[in-house]
Amino acid sequence: MLITGPLQHRKRHTILVIDAIDECKSGPQRRELVETLSTTAQENSNLRIFITSRPDPVIEKVLEPLSIKAKLTDRLHDTNHRDNTDDIAAYIHKSLDGVLSFAKRQQLVKKANGLFIWASTACRMFDAESSALDPESTYDGLISIDQPGAIDGVYNLIFERIDQASKAVIGEMLGMLLAAFEPLTIGDLEDLVKHTKVRGNVKAMQMILGSILKVDPTTNSIQFRHPTIVEYLRRCCIAPTTNTRDRIHIKIDHAHGQVASWCLHRLNSPAEGLKFNICQIESSFYLNRQIPDLEARVASFISRGLRYASLHWPFHVSAMDDSSGHKLQSELAHIVTSPFALYWMEILSVTGGVMRAISGLRAAAQRQSVSDLSKRFG
Image 1 (cartoon, rainbow, N blue to C red):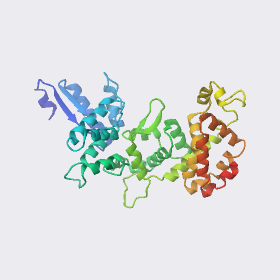
Image 2: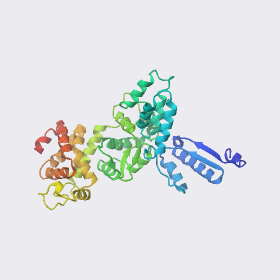
Image 3: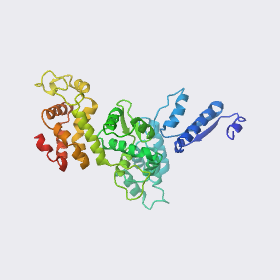
Image 4: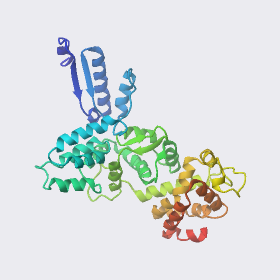
């Protein structure tokens, strides 16, 4: 009533702006706040409410039924929408006018890659009162290799909001995504989580971490929204020197071991794994270029997960922890012996992965636990 009461006596429209409504940490409180705002807006025709938020399942659930004229869509950090990039450009040019040249300001716009948090943090680094560096040195640092900085505070806040019971499980699933050499589909990540007996829910994780994860609508692959979150998570793989209870900690070598186990499981699957003449080609004497529908056959008979396993398992083996290496001895021996090695080579041939496999085997053979891998393959 403190807000709506006076509005009843105004004839002009009133606009109420609430920024970062997702910063309200309590889920029930966020839901109650958004429900109150939506009800108030519907009951007062001269009130317009403008809110900003990262993707949040609680807020989306309340607002989705109200999306009558336009569908509720996630456009956060999406550079396909020009207004996202244009807004960041306007902000950087206004903030750093007279500090950097136009060309260098444009480079910062590109570097932000649609992430306003990065842009605002970068611009604050040029504050003469808080920085002892000259603007050119600050610019060079931002443009060169990404450095740990204030952006970590944003990601720390995201993970601080996750309850401790879920944090370890989410850390394991993020480790799998971080270890992967290409984006995994939701289905493949769910299969990976199930195979490794991690008690996690992939879709729930994607909703909880909607501000840093997105799902490609075409491929259904789950991806990190921005390179800075990947760099942040890589830093989370380093053993902390201080008490950082609220942060995510990732054992990346263990994650590689989990993905390696899943890859070998996919390859050895009787139903969906390696098999003779997997693409059902009429004759083995044909060269790949002599098969007009080869791409269609590959897409039809070789699943995305099997293709991933075929291309990348040696690299996961080379990066896994020793414990995983000992556990996977029998699976490794199975996959590099005849006839399965020949079936694997067939997939590599039709998917263009032969050279990657050679590099991967060389890397895997350097591990003590699989030092006989190249001998078995030979």
